[in-house]
Length: 114
Image (cartoon, rainbow, N blue to C red):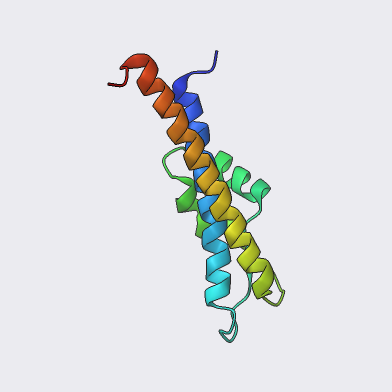
């Protein structure tokens, strides 16, 4: 049986991943016209490896600069970065909505709504 703690941890991890993806995309958009700026990307497999490789004392957000954001030698496409940021934002919102509904059900089961 899955514990509530593992469900919360999974949801928190999902929110962190989408937050990192949105952060990277918005940084690319903000620096699109900066001379010498190299586009960065955050791929799911990199995020998982960074999280699994951490000592357990750091969070996924702490791993961004060292492990997650990989520089690529490509020109920044504003269209694709806006899509990536929007996609990450929508996924984040969906995860947050699901969490809110699940906690609403837990509140109903354990405490009852008045």
